[in-house]
Image 1 (cartoon, rainbow, N blue to C red):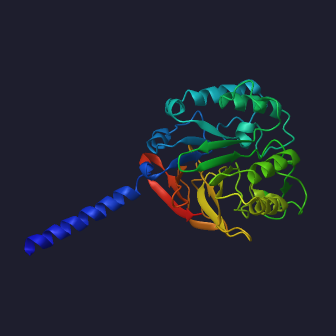
Image 2 (cartoon, rainbow, N blue to C red):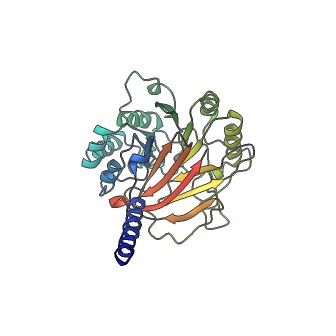
Image 3 (cartoon, one colour):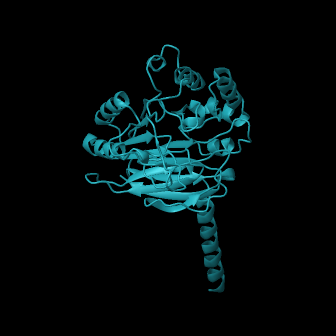
Length: 342
């Protein structure tokens, strides 16, 4: 009996240790399809996470914006910074093993908090597409803006990744001159984030989608709207418009991915007419973060804000119609996790 008791104790300790180990790593092999994504990356800073991203065995890497920090109207400078990023050892290795897609934000677009007014946007688009290895004959080379969609057809199901452009067409923001916040929401109905043509394309894309999961990539946050920085909430009518479109399109498993903020967090809300909660997963940043973060309101937040260098992972389970969202840092440290069935 004494030997049996010792054996049971050892078994419990072993199982307990095993559980802790499993929960501290990305667990890539449990996924039918894995997306890794991130934002806010300086090409001339230490890039510590590419080995961890590769260890997660993603099926695709998605840039969420601010790939480099150019903030320039000099085309050659922007090109040089993209080339510098391409030469980062870990990223160069990732590109040989994993497809790379994504969007831009203001710093790689060329103008801090910039939008439609940026005079270099046409050549900046071409430099971005060069960095993304988009073929010269692609229709994306002659259209305006960098929005696009990617389909992943798998034995168990399909995933559509819809990449938005929140820069090229975005009209003016409203400065907040009454508080310490940078911006306040525009008057309802005033201005646009995506512009008419991109909205029409997005409506067609969502309504025609037969994918099991539809992942919308937005460089700026969709749900968190009270911090005063850039977000969809500065255009409240467009927030309502996208929610209505998601419902009317009957698209399955819609998820939003965002960056920009130098913090990572999960936001979630119920939308009338939608059978599942809408999640906005913010992952930021890859090389630098809001280290002095001391709190800000977000009525949709789930869990804690992470102000550490990290990237996001989405593990898909087609049989269970489930997504496991993870915030992962250096050496595979797990900072946050959220699970949702669709």
